[in-house]
Structure formats: structure tokens, C-alpha cells
Length: 59
Image 1: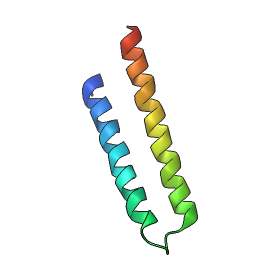
Image 2: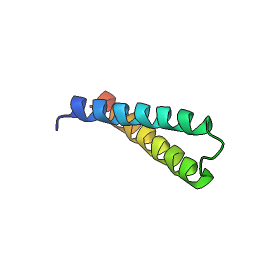
Image 3: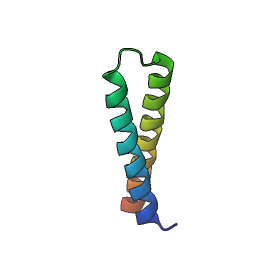
């Protein structure tokens, strides 16, 4: 997978998680541990996206 398509996939997954988190917050029965895991995954994706962007900028 080339870098632009990898970055696009990461951004898509980040957006998907953002939507899932928003939906989960609308339901009071959402498991707080599951919500925390989704937020953690979203943050990891954001960090990876930023790292890739910085690597591309530096090269």
C-alpha cells in the first residue's frame, strides 16, 4: 500500500470511529469501557496520521 492510500485509510478509520463514538454517546446504555476503548483507538489513529504527515513533510 502506498503512503497516500495508507493515509487515506487511516483517516477513513478515524472518521468511522468518530461517528461510532458520537452514536454511542447518544445511547445511555453504552458501556463506558467500550467507549474508552474507541476513544483510545481514535487517538492512536490520530497520532499515527500526524506522524506520517510529519515524516512526509520532513522528507
